Length: 207
Image (tube, rainbow, N blue to C red):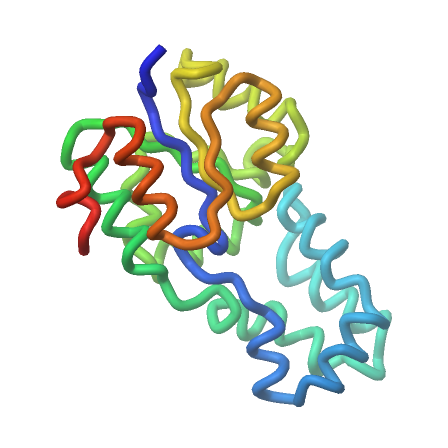
């Protein structure tokens, strides 16, 4: 079966997601390591991705950890500085696929408010034919139920889908459903995969 739609993760595929980089720049690596070891920022962020309110979640965690209150609040106040910059080559590939009439979907763990902010900052994120955002469904990758939402809504499944994501567990969950998959480690490798599937020519993949 040939690929009928291409599915993109967003963070670290189309835009960089690097909270550590901001904290290192503002407070130094040692303070950042101390903060990340002491406070469950990842757990809070997963809650936001499942639909918890963004500002309320971040500020509540800050109030629970007064030694790091100012640093934690930056997860909300400077969020766009963590979710930046765009990855131009990946954006180019997305645009080329759309220009050829190939459906492109997003399947991404994202909060409601953070996705809105990202779309306002990066217009490429508004160009998907269909967007499946975790907070909108109360599900996060790699939960198989989240992948099933895309299949049910789009009417596509298995080898008709090609999916890229930067996290192995998310790729494994898609592979288990029969999807074609690519572990994203950079846009060059993703471009080669798109060529291998006959979706783009090598020339078309060049920015």
